[in-house]
Length: 396
Image 1 (tube, one colour):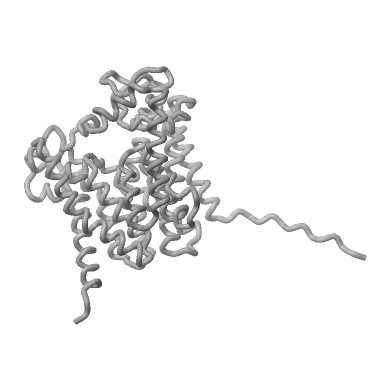
Image 2 (tube, rainbow, N blue to C red):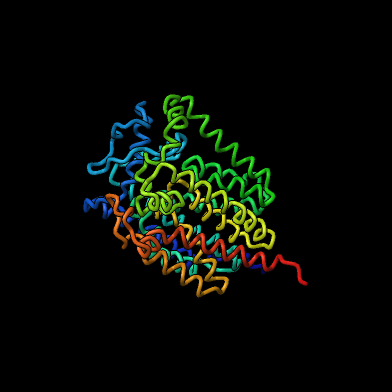
């Protein structure tokens, strides 16, 4: 007598995946609590929603008038490229109080994804539980918790770039480069990964990223031609539109030089010159590291160079400290991982006197602490370049 085949028993959910769900659900619950308690969080996520509503109403985005639908106490302009509105449209369907909850939950998930992709590029067999543990530790870094507090999209954009460059492009997918193009359509800084793709021999992916970016921006000339023209004519080239560039929280070459030069208008050109000087070693490092199979390290060089080069890199843009610390730790460079963690967890840029032009009167010690992120990256680029030169030197 034949017995019927045994049905496969359902597999129990992996604890690591449950931990991810719990982390994201916790972020969502926290967002709902913030809404009910009336916490003043998510200023930037409120701008995203207001920008989407302004677009849907047919009003202009890039004027000096206050955006419609902004909550009381928030008077920030819409500083993103026109195509960013397309990404922010779903937020217009949410109640104002739930926007921060949605962006926070999505950002926490993006944080886990970024850690997962970074970790697997160094240690392919790593499980979900260590990834979640690293993501929880990352919440203590100033760029991360400030991104979450403001409701910024930094973690989402970083995750998109990492997934595209380290996973999609690495697999030779026909979709390689698309996520980079979308990320650049939301904020211009990810455009730096187009030359990254070129330098690492991925010409088709670089072309896709460029076409995606250009197509998304071009589309906006149909429903909002005046906004699209105004952004590219004036708003895109005005760094002061998003705040004083000399403020301590602008951790870029432009910010550092502007503080040292008492806000002189030539500070931008000096910063551009410094960026041009750093371009050669940064590009050389990217090529060397990629050819050696250190793809994450190559991506990080590009990301941190972009933070230096951008006219405005607020401290919360420096979420790239997360894959840097995770990669160093998993490679066994614990001392370096600890140094990165201490630097970005210390919130040193919040401890130095700042605001109302105080930056112009800093002494040497305050200047070092107040430019800590910028100086640290310059120093590391110098060390890495010297190390690679020694490896590259012929043996006599």
